[in-house]
Image 1 (cartoon, rainbow, N blue to C red):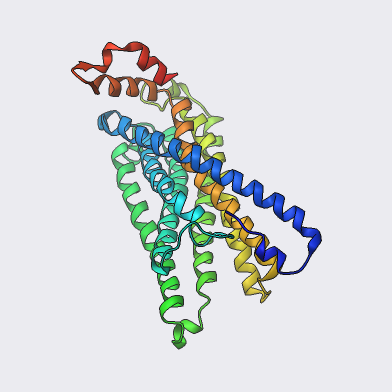
Image 2 (cartoon, one colour):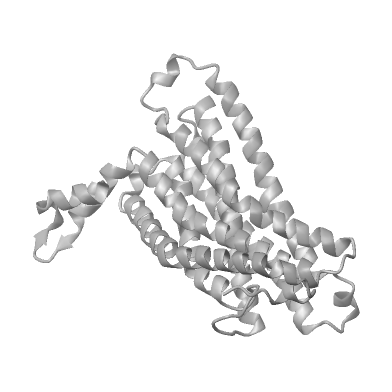
Length: 333
């Protein structure tokens, strides 16, 4: 799946064993994710969406953001085979595709990345609002749904600029306007700035505010209208997991852009190392589609009861699934 040819182009024979070990390790990680992670991502993200949408009135503010992250997770799981096995990897590809199809895959990946990071940032900010101002319109589910709509629209618009840079580099390379632009570096810079730094600063700001509010708890915290205490654990786990899995991807984009802007030749051994790091970081980013629904399923306290109600509504032939409580308990286990 991954090739050592870029590393071998320097003629360094002493690097061959290390390159082979890295090739085997990365291939194993990729295949493990494709065999285990992709089915988990498709299954649990679909289950998360169905469980919440079957009772829209019972959705809380965190559920809205996790449903949107689940939709992005479904797209990431569907794109994973093409991104890890198709053209653009650091080794041979199992199939080929046109440049337009490859660009489309990258744009969809960027859209999912933006939605995931911004939903994490907005979840942090809305959690602070809910803690500081309970039962206000600003922290309502209705408002969260509209905010998520703007997140998807903003992600599409931001990725459209990357699409323009890519198209310009493919079909208009002879034009003066396009020739003077650093197409890939500009697209990477946009993604690092808008897709990582901005939501990162928003999450950091929100966590600082939340820590201050938690130190000033009042008797209002005992009211039924407050968020479930498990939401705080879910928020911390979400922030740590999302930024832990997506940071290597944005660091590789930043490293590629820095090398290009400084005029360093990205070839030979540097090219091989960069491609291997890019593939590994992309695999980590794609794995978030399988990890996040699992975190939601095990930390969110309302998920088991919603899942029971969903299972009871599902027909099992001529009988109701509620007639098999043992099967329901096995699913929830």
